[in-house]
Amino acid sequence: MTTAANLGMQVLSEQAERLGLHLTGDQLGQFARYTELLQAGNRRANLTAITDSEQVQVRHYLDSLTAVLAMREWRDGARVVDIGAGAGFPGVPLKIAFPGIRLTLAESVGKKTAFLRELVSELALDDVEVVTVRAEDLGRTEGYRGQFDVALARGVTSLAALIEYALPLCKGHGHLLAWKGSDGPVEAKMSVNALDELGGKIAGLHSVNSLSPPLPADRWIISVEKVRRTPGRYPRRVGVPAKQPL
Image 1 (spheres, helix red, strand yellow):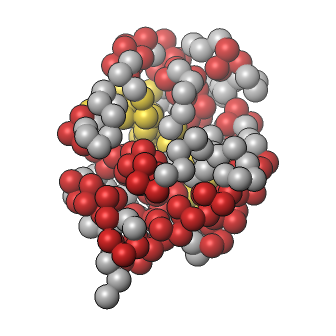
Image 2 (tube, helix red, strand yellow; image 1 turned 180 degrees about the horizontal axis):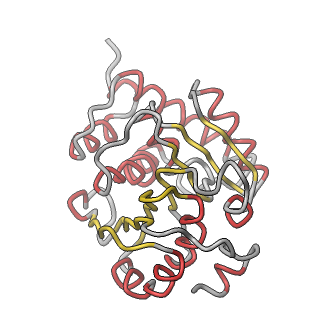
C-alpha cells in the first residue's frame, strides 16, 4: 500500500489534516513528483531558495493550502488565476487539492512559464493554462478581464498593488486572496484608497498562527471582495502599480 510516509510526504499529509484536508495517495504522489521536478527545474531557472523536501512541503505546499482558511469551498468549475505564479505556488498545490477548479498560471518570466508547462504536463493536470504575461497586461485582455472567481497573489509587493492587479481580473463578488507576513493587518488599513478606487472591500483577515509551527508565526491571508465594477483605466501601465500604489 502506498502511504504518505513512503512517498516522503508525511509532513504535508499530517499538516493538511489540521486544515481539514485529507489528501489521497494519488494527490500525495503528485506532490512528491512536484518536489522532484522543482529540484530539477531549480538547476535550470531560479525558481526557489527552498529545495529541501520537508521545507518545500511546509513553506510552499502547506502555505499554499492555507487558502482554505479564507475560502473553505472551492467549487468545481471555478475560475482561478495565480498572479505571478513563479514555480506554481499557491495555484498548483490548490489545483492538486481541488482538481475541479480551472486554473490560469500567469507569470512574466519565460523560464518560469517553461517550467510551469512541464510541471502541468508531468502532473497530468487538466484545465490549467499557463500564460507568459505581466499582470497589468492580463487585466486589460479580453477573455481574462472580469472572468475569475478567485485571484491568488503570494508575493512581496504591497497589498494596494495586488488589488490593482487582481480586481480587474475578478468577476463581481470575486475575491483576491493575498498572502502576507506580520504587516498584513497594517497593509489592509493602508489599502483604503485602492479599495475605494478599484471597487473592493476587505472581506477578512485570516491568521495562519494555528499552523505555527511548522509554518512561521504571524502569517496572514487577506481576502478582498470585488463589490463594484473596476474603472476601465485600471490596471495602469506595466510597472506603475508597484512603483506608485494607490
